[in-house]
Image (cartoon, rainbow, N blue to C red):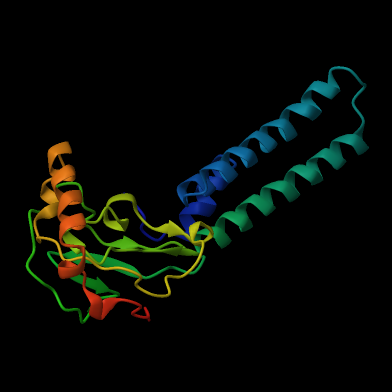
Length: 205
């Protein structure tokens, strides 16, 4: 998952060669394709019209000015996108998490079998995105798998714990049908004895 910061000069150079290519290089694939299509249309429309109407110097000057203005806009826009504010640099090493080179001070418990498809190289969080990680670090399909989450995806904030139940630390390794039935029975039988009553109503900060 390549999410490294982009070079503005390279984005401008690519846009100069092919309209929209600099935007694609900066990760804005849809915007780049739209600008490419618009540039192609802007180039073909005058050429086609000249086959229908007699060439006119004013018409040629007008279309040339529009083409130059559009090209300048695309180059400047590509530079702005490439230079947009870079997000935090996240790097995960074993159970440790580094943010911009500083290791987070976290309490780490015993770890379990590691996943092979985790993001292990440095990851730069895009603007208006969040790098999310589950509290059950070794059993969480989080941003280490699918990348940063857009801000628009967040619906609210967790306020409090309404129920917490004590389970074996390796329970996530047993996900079969029979295991699920046995786990449900454990909840019914030991609801009162294994419920973590001290966490009931705990406010999340």
